[in-house]
Image (tube, helix red, strand yellow):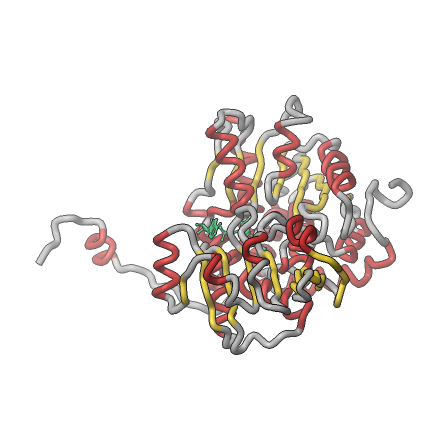
Amino acid sequence: MRGFAVEYDIADQSLAELGGRRIEWAARRMPVLGAIRERFEREQTLAGVTIGACMHVTTETANLMLVLRAGGAAVTLCASNPLSTQDDVAAALVAEGIPVYAIRGEDAGTFYRHIDAVLDTNPDLVFDDGADMTTVLHEARSDQPILGGMEETTTGVIRLRAMASDDVLRFPVVAVNDSDTKHLFDNRHGTGQSSLDGILRASNILFAGKNVVVAGYGDCGLGIAQRADGLGAKVIVVESNPVRALAAAMDGHRVMTTDEAGPLGDVFITATGDIHVFRKQHFDVMKDGVILANAGHFDVEIDLKALSEMAVGYRELRDNLGEYTLEDGRRLLVVAEGRLVNLGAAEGHPADVMDMSFADQALAAEWLKENGASLEPKVYVLPQDLDHEVARLKLESMGGGLEQLTDEQIEYLNSWQHGT
Ligand code: NAI
């Protein structure tokens, strides 16, 4: 669409003022990113760099885009999920002069046209969340030169590592997800809290006393289980990895198979990155009125095709709460069409935690700008000193003190001669 200050394709430009206020509120809770912004602005760290981003269009992402632009980059943004776009945020960014191609609820064709629009700007660096843009750059646009990429989420990193092991990855990518200051906080505390927030906004149920089945006990599942436990739910964990299943058991949760959990659960939440975790054989035995939600990246964890085929009726019972009626009269409810529940039915992760993830992203862009040309096409993690710097700044902003080791302690910890 042409006619405004920039080319863009968004739902409603009149929402810009609301989006601007919400972006400002998020910025206040992102002190680490704010400190990076000051330095980037002063040093024009990203001058001359063109950036294409495929990310959830939220208030936090907006702040990352503004930081990159303050650092001198030309930035264009599209959505990394058809249902996560906050249309007011898209409008506010366009009003700021940042081109955005994202409309909440866009169909698959529009989703990919928007990725193309961003790639048409010939970015040097790409920011991805789930590796959809990177995949386009390896299929339809395999000749387009790219200096390097950043990947935000676990599922995206898994896809990139698969490309690297197939020897097809053609530019270096930083697995931002794998920084400790990302996955140990964003995935645990961010997804943990906001996934329950999404279920609550869609259903307004009481968690206390409910059997909540959490599938996957990785960083996201652990966070979800912890928060559900805190609300008084009886948590059941389903895990395929024995160490993580054991960890769940020792954290006080019941651990069982999906078949065993099927008839027991009141709420089912998937966070595995896997396909068809809950499927026909489980729908067959679930109780009337159960709620199903997915926190994993793609909408494949709950087999909605099978559920639709089993259903004799469907209606949208409340906003973001779809009700499938089965032949025997049981009703199964699905939040946000089985897409990322925290982004589809709530606002995604709070800014306080995205502060660290997006500080990592900004530092990764700086690192790739400086080193990208000499790197092999592999998946990299950010150097640990940058990870620690983000943690130090966040702790400082929260008023926490960090112990400094004495020379004697450093010498002791680095020596093997000290014994009994
Ligand atoms: P992870 O790899 O740490 O954990 C996934 C766990 O699921 C693993 O322990 C694995 O053994 C288990 N698992 C896999 N298939 C299973 C199955 N069929 N049944 C039971 N357990 C199974 O991944 P992480 O970081 O927890 O992420 C999970 C998903 O959430 C990914 O798709 C990731 O991209 C997404 N994610 C979503 C966010 C959001 O905002 N909603 C934020 C961050 C990640």
